[in-house]
Length: 421
Image (tube, rainbow, N blue to C red; front, side, top):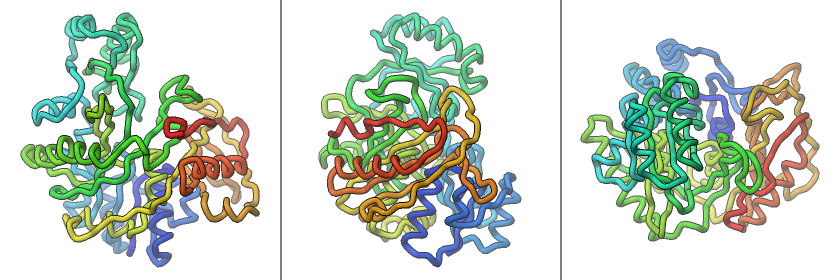
């Protein structure tokens, strides 16, 4: 099968790697890809969606998989479908679940899906009044896309008001913050759950746990994610059923009523409070770095899952996972997440250890290729993934792999999966 993958991160690298591992004869193309995706397929650079769809048609692309949120919110799926191409991801209308936090919160309220008490407003007076009614900490969110960084957890009322003021003035996140959500802080533990959907049916994947903060012990600023592990032992069958019945099923039914059937990945950020799942937010694509640990756990066909979901045929397949655990550790560049970093050559030690060879791998993100050498380009550079029969074994193997990757200024957490251990 000829498959086009949109995106340039470790998430997209992982999807391509899983597809190649299942069958070498799949031919992969990346738009735009990164400095390492040439190991899996061919990088192309056609940014205009119409031109890209015409290229896909001309080159016999049988399936397109969209990785990041921006092209989904901009409507790439609608463009490809107008050319009768098969594409995995939600329509522009359905992608509003991530594109607008206000739309998402109002949708949750309309269809009685459990979520935190909130107000959505562009009025500073209203926001301040609601802020005063809450106990601290207080959550302040920008409405639009902010690359995973538009959420502030304020520890005091004053801090919350500063966050509201800076968002509404456009200082923090530009137009993405011109409307805000202020909501109560939920005290529990957070989970990432992913449902692959075809508009009618869905398959819920094993729950993962992400590590958002930059430093060990969840210190420092929020990032796009510094590591993750799956499956988490914090979820049992009862909780999975509650998520299916109270969150996913009413969401799919509600989106049909909104004339925007949901196809693609529904990423549910969940807070578990006293055993009950509460929806923090929706995203409309795989999490990064969660995708990097879920893909290698799949034992059934990855490409078939994407194809069946994109053609409303999920009911025909059973998606299966190994009994193993996966841990992914992100390596970021020196100045992440504060600013850009100078490119630094990546040196990989030769792998002589059979355990590392067999049970670990690297998924690349912020890298470029110059004179056949890989360079760390800034941001999150790569993810070292380890598999094992226990979380500890998977984690130890992931860190063994980390020890074999070197570049100037490399930054990583040393405590990924600590919640489970």
